Length: 245
Image 1 (cartoon, helix red, strand yellow):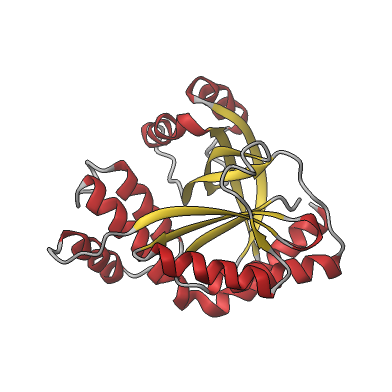
Image 2: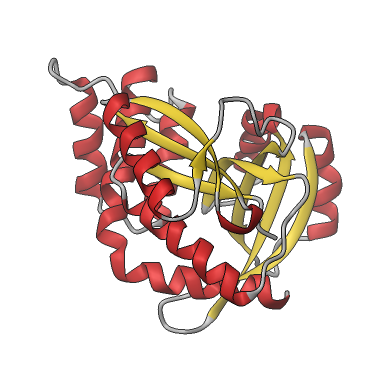
């Protein structure tokens, strides 16, 4: 898996020390989903996915329930999803996805972080042809799942690629997982196909995948990582996608 994998592994291990900042971000996604489609995850696929991802990050049940309750309150803030496009050091390109109740505050904070760390905001639409949106699912690899058979079955539901990977754990060991990539518009069909086959999805998302991945030196990677960390420290920033290999 090479240097890129080792870099991602080190970055994830580093961020475990700041997991407390992740729960409020996950809570916002749950609140948005509940407000948009209702508080019942059985009737609201978007909320079901948000809860699934929150549980994958070990978010307590009480926090999840509180986030849903906030959406039902009369004074619930109007939280909107906004994506900013940016250029970072060494030719890195970034999609910065945010969830905010104050767009003016968010864009000012994101722009300031970029400028202070060698980056700049780009005009909306600048990166349309540099990234492709994909439906991405992850689940644990087990002996009970025939991967070849599963891959053939899921092609009809929009599957494009199946890969095996290893994710670092807090105990220092790696866990074997399967990652599925599918068409952006096939998210719902693929999710339903997993449910019908009794496969427990650990993470499901719509991601932006770079069409031309960029490789950097370790020193350059450290500089870009510092910028990404500062962006993700902002309370409104949900995730930062880059064109890094």
